Image 1 (cartoon, rainbow, N blue to C red):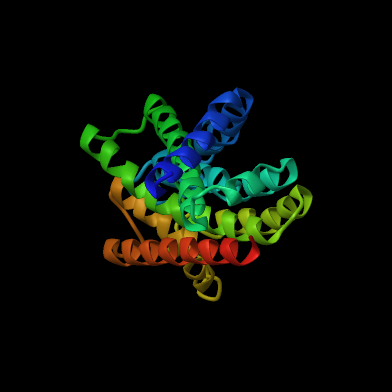
Image 2 (image 1 turned 45 degrees about the vertical axis):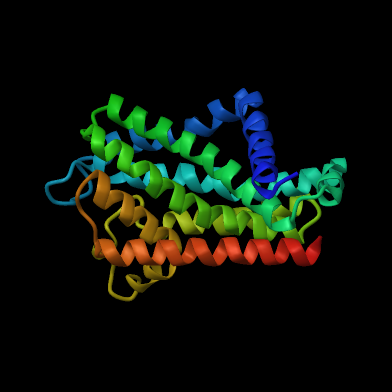
Length: 248
């Protein structure tokens, strides 16, 4: 089996698993809808962000949240494959461990993009104004952001052997990353002593990158966001491939 075919096979398995779990697709949209419709609507007049509508302002953050929750859960697929013995079958196949990681990363990123697109469609249906060109340009940006977050999930999943421990670590990692990223508030409005914290959070640059493309505003220059997100994605995917090869 060629490496390309091996990557495709692992990717296809992740896609089949995703579309068979319809309750997962529906439940993953509940929180984004809550943030957009309830939080975004109720806080519209309470937060001053200039000329941008608050619901439009948080839409990129909500999309990033959807990408993050879907992407970091990629580590669970590795743990499940270990528990059911499928991982051993993949490891004895004539496919390199790098191809397995790439296939899983692309598969999870594809599902994350699908989730992000659905959130963006919900935002459009509830008042977000965005051109067709921008809509399609956002998709590769979502892929870039998702790959970095997938790398985190795969790295942790590679060194853990139980789902409970993985979920515990994710709870301590995911929520702080989301709330500190400026997804729900302008980071420039933070007190001086707290303003440095979002700049340590890699998700901040993904949120700002999406916000620049969707809304046209950003607290950080576009090129800075793009370079940091690209470097972060490269780093985490490389780390996940190394850890997976070492542990398996």
